[in-house]
Length: 183
Image (cartoon, rainbow, N blue to C red; front, top):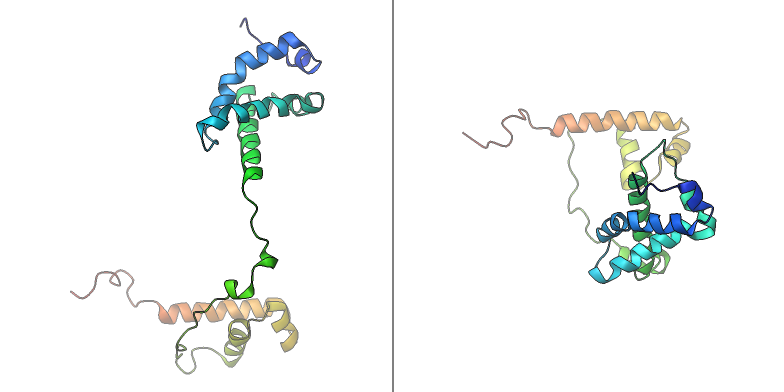
């Protein structure tokens, strides 16, 4: 191929190789950033930033290209998209930090209006206690384990078994008929 790029010469600073590189891959890079751009006007700016990033710091990024891992076109496409995404992300307006948002704006106001009545004996007293501590008191597994003086795995296991019983109890009797209505 007449326009083969000598990357070794390019990273050593060969102007002729850089010019050939830009001529050969400009279309590819433009296409890659076009998919990331929000408007047509920023496509060329993003492509220019990709080329700047490739030759910045003595071609540091370009030197990381490994032909054993990907073809140069594939690698350049990934670099172009990543660079465009990074630039566009930096241009986004800054959001309010979570800590600065008033608690009232984060509060969930919907509360269940009634508790589900479980049949007597469906869950063991220990399972009921663990579910109450985890869900009603909003405790962490480690805290429940500490309070009951058991291993956290015991809490997870008991919770799992209780949830299996609840799923089985509340599952439709015949799942195949559950969506068909009365016939």
